[in-house]
Image (cartoon, rainbow, N blue to C red; front, side, top):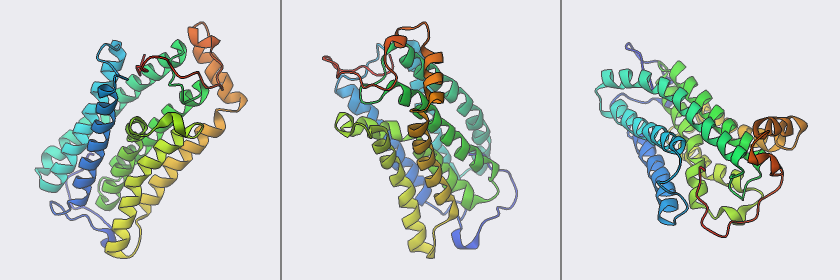
Length: 268
């Protein structure tokens, strides 16, 4: 989300005119709506709680903070001032590091405590969630690196943010009914934003910008890698090393837990 001063370089077939392009700003708002809707729905259903541990609150503040930054940056890129867009972009780059640390703390704690949602196997969850973050950071980092190529910059940022909407879709979809492909189903929801960008490009210029293909390949690649790695000896070794000495050690890594008799409080 950082943009350097100086003339922008872009493919003339996929221009993102400064202060004129509203598509990406609208996409940012749509993604924010999905995220807020997903987590609000779980709160309303009693499946999440403000009584969660501190690590969950830190995670929530950082990730919701990212959503706010993303929407703000898209508005600044469209309406200005661009100087503020550039400054906030560098703050956002550092913010991602905090997000990764907070997310890993929560993910590892859930595996160790044996509180992984019952529609995931613990071993798959422990690998899939971090790989989603790797995809997000890779796409977003690439967007920052290509900040002078505004056509790439905008699209890669949307793809990166799309990776983060998977958990929100997972809170809106009937995940227990989608086992064993619940995680992938949430990924399909996230991919809708990428497909929307592809369709828009195709209608506007007659071709799809390669950034969308990279984003889609990253999303699919992380889903496939997590699924395959989780059933290998490497995946088992990672899981066992993570839960050793904790209650989660007694939980089979590749088995689905029985549905809870009370509402599942996520993030424990």
